[in-house]
Every structure is written in structure tokens, then in C-alpha cells.
Length: 321
Ligand code: GLV
Image 1: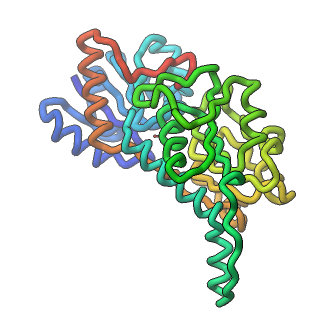
Image 2: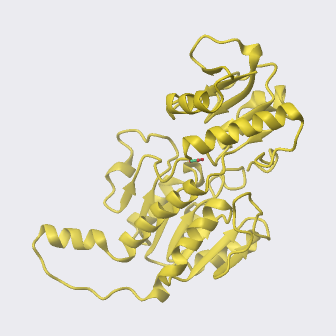
């Protein structure tokens, strides 16, 4: 029994150290170190290159280093070689909380006009502006799983009106997710999306990446936001058509955007997102899963796979999350 790590670009060493401390008897290898492929029963990965799974014929479980599994499910050999392999993701309440903190920071900076006051300070200019009424600070969260649920709940104690959108007509019963979201107005299904967008001043994307959510935030959907709306993406870059965002920013329809994820990561140096005055761009740092949680859940998944037990953190491979 051995565990292999293919975590790039997430550094493997802290996870290897945590695994060796938690399970000293289990061989743990980084993918680029010499290892015996037939001994590998669990792989911990962030993304997989096509063909990467071919040598691991005794694989019992594939575990994601974080909440999203899109980069694992996308690899064709998973379907071809391991059609029934459980794929698990990490469910870390601390990560959800950190992501919620990031979203709050971006939303509050926008709603309380921090960039405007920073430029005033730079010009030694004293001018007070009315605080935006709460009724014009409507938060709309796309995706009401564990991450979206934590984000939606983080805004409530501050008095913001909060709504959320779930792709399926019920709030998903995601492990770690709040089953119900008291205080959050829930919209659901295809018909619910325009309704949510039309009444959202700060849109937060916390959706998993699936064929249904790829390119969901495009010129047509973003244009349904009220003029002056702000967009925060902590989901996946592929969900937001960056050129469409830019067009709506430059046309003055959108006030700004905070992007932690991008169509290409990192964006090329000449990508407009680095320079745009109304875009705040961060390098996919909104919230990482804690190494100890990743390791405990990986070891549990491996134990369950060997014992033939159910995998509570397995994703629905056909749904993509
Ligand atoms: C981060 O993007 C994650 O999927 O955990």
C-alpha cells in the first residue's frame, strides 16, 4: 500500500511531511521521485496530465487536494481505465471560512469605496461620501454548496440582503454544507438565474466547474446584473468569459471585479486583467485546504477503499462535483 502525490502547482512537501507523520508505515512518494507504480493505491492530486494514471493499475482511490475536482475528472484516462474509481474531494470547513473571508474583504472594499478613499488620500483630499444603503448592497451567491453556503452566511450578520442560486432545484446536501440557509433567499434552476442576477449588486461565483457552468458568466448573463454591479469569482476561471467581463466593465455596465481564478493560471503577463483599474486580481489564494485535513481525509478514503466501505467524500463523477 502506497500513496502518490501529484499536487503541482501546490507544493507536495508539506503534504508528504504531514502524511509521513500521520501514517509512518505507509510509503509516500512524490510523482517525480522513483517509486513502484504497482504499489500505489491512492493518488492525491490537483490536476492530472493525460495518461498520468496509466502506470497505476492497482489504484483504489483518487483524492483531490481541495474542494474542486474538475482538473481530475477532465483527464480522459480516468474514464477509460478507471470508470468506477472513487474520486474524493477535500471538505475543510476552515477552507470554506477562509474563502468567505476573502469574498467579504473584496465585497466590503467595493461597497465601502476603499479604492476611492485611497485615491483621495493619495491626493490629500478630504471628501465624505454617503454610505451606500443596504438595499443597494444585495449579495448574490452562485452555488450553494459548502463554499457558497459559508459565503452567503458570512454576509448575514452584517445586515446585507443575501440571495443564492443553486443549479438544481434544491440546496445540495454537500458534506459540510448547511442543509438549509436561514436568511438566504434561494433561487434555483435555469429559470432562477435571471431572477437572481436582476436583483444582485455583488455577484459571487462559488460554483463547481462542470460542462453546465463553463462559460456561464458571459456577456448575456452578466448584462442581466443591474448597472454598477460588482463581480467576484472564487469558483473557476473557466466559468467567466474574461473578454465579456472586460467589455461590460469598459462599457460602464459593471463597476468592477475581484478575480481569484482565471481562464489561464497564471494569466499571461500581457493579459488585461493585470492592468485593468477596476479589476483586483489575486493568484488563486482565496482559501486553500489545510494540509492536516487533506491528509486525514486521504488516509480515511484509502482505508475505506481497502475495506470496501462507502466514501462519504466521493463526488458524483457524472455530475462533476
Ligand atoms: C481550490 O480552488 C480548491 O478547489 O480547493
